[in-house]
Image (tube, rainbow, N blue to C red; front, side, top):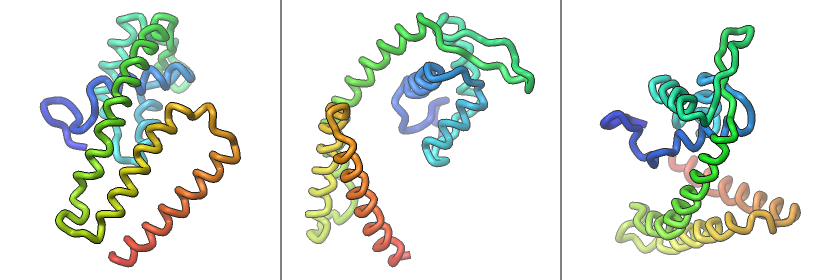
Length: 174
């Protein structure tokens, strides 16, 4: 992702802070570990720069949301989540829910606006199906705790099958 005016293009403001806090809530981590985990989670599509991670870690520490641990044997400085950080993250989670509500409204518009088949009727039904799938995932997100193991397996199998079928068609075009 390209930077513009010192910011990564396309990422909501505060996303990196939220991700870092959420990771540190799980376990103490170094800046390098955080960068590697984000890169892995995004399948290599986003690797935050040290110039964004380390100032953020310093800011979180200055605010009392995290604290530095003594350097380990390899010389890594790790950061640990604090109780104040937990309160701050809870506020961030409320903002994330608000963002998700906005996405629930925006995501279908984005799919409808995809340049796939503009003025081409052959993709009209595909765009409607994709739109419906996104709406279902948005509803699903709010009810995730109610989903049984069997239903989660069925959903996963359906999505794997769908993605394989589409991938097969796309690969034929290459």
